[in-house]
View 1 (cartoon, rainbow, N blue to C red):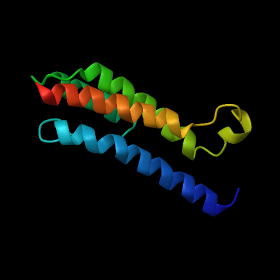
View 2: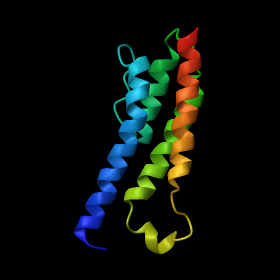
View 3: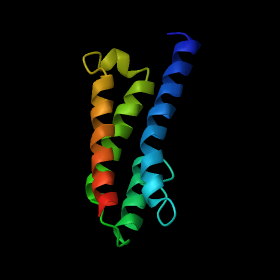
View 4: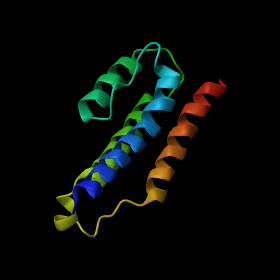
Length: 111
């Protein structure tokens, strides 16, 4: 695998992470911004967001973010090509997660 492929994978991971950060921060950014997609960033956000009186299923959002982060990590982790060749990331899988996240945030925004 060449440097160009590694860079493309990293860029794709960043793009995917932004697709999840933006809608969460549109809803929570003023009071509980999500700083990143690492496990510790998501947990920190979960704790802060849970303290807000916003009609959002914070636990569900945190679960979706964690799954998206794991999938984005697989996109960029070149070593897993060898060890986990059967586990490929489907664009549909990430799309499904984006839709679920949007649904959770929209329901909250509608009330």
